Length: 313
Image (spheres, rainbow, N blue to C red):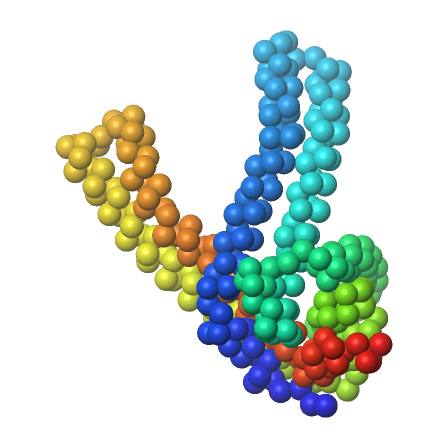
């Protein structure tokens, strides 16, 4: 079965058109849930750390005591880092699953398709599997690539730089090829409710060039959307912030008002920042739809609905 690049690129935009409120809801959920997660981590670790540091600053610095406090602070950071890391994986899997569910099983619309079940936990397990694999593959390839580049760069004349350039291009294309071979692992994992890492290798067989073209088109699309968002949000932010500053200046009756007078107007400044905050949260959902939609659409074209996909396993 062939891959329709046009349908894949348009999958995210089609999803935004069909379910704009759900897409915006995903963005707000992800934006504020991660913010709450960081606040929880700070309350668990940040306050005790500041207490330790304040005690140390009130005393005469002692190298051994400072080293002991630094070790204690590092030990105290681990619970917060673990909570934030696991929480971020769960939140990401919930939103990722909502995008996949909206395309594969669009009838499940309640609660903006947000769930936390077997499929989402399977996505978390896949992420936990991918993280060490990606790190190891990157480190090993970087060491080998660095040795090859060093050897080629020592060649005399123009041959060395030319070969280095060719090798770097080949190295980048090889990494991209590997990434594309496993690009359908997440949609497969979600659809089947279990980790399907190597299954993506078989499913993408014979579709390398189509996936290669799709990947580059999506890079351009995401860059274009990001630039458009940056321009629009900057203009809106400047308008609201400028209006708030002008209002504060006129209310304080002075070209250089006292800083305390400016701080007293913090509700106005907060309201001025609110449109930027709302746009940033909404853009999170738009980004999720545009970036994840194409790959789940490719999976849908190759395998069909999750019910059909079960027959392949």
